[in-house]
Image (cartoon, rainbow, N blue to C red; front, side):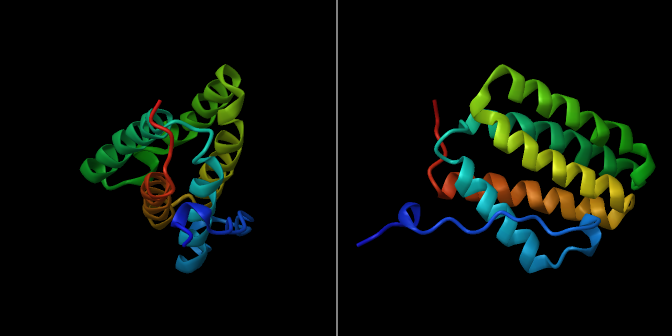
Length: 136
């Protein structure tokens, strides 16, 4: 009997264009593929550290309800991801793919894109746990 950890890895090809134009099914499929790809190399605390930064942005957005008020914080995720990848090579693929997702969110430049970004990141965290993301 095979477990979910032994299943074939879904394709990680991210959709083109702004995130607010991605189909919901593609968004979930890509988040699952990313999580499965990184589950053996990226530690849970590294994913959660990125997630906590995203949650701060989500909290600010919930208060202000304006994309423009969180745009700079969203943009700053890119150098933070680059720093994490520079510190540890195993994080590089996660950082590169999440940077593309941040860029797609910035390209959307609106509240709908931001909401989809939050959904994408939350899905990555959930699937990372499902696929047995490393704890240490």
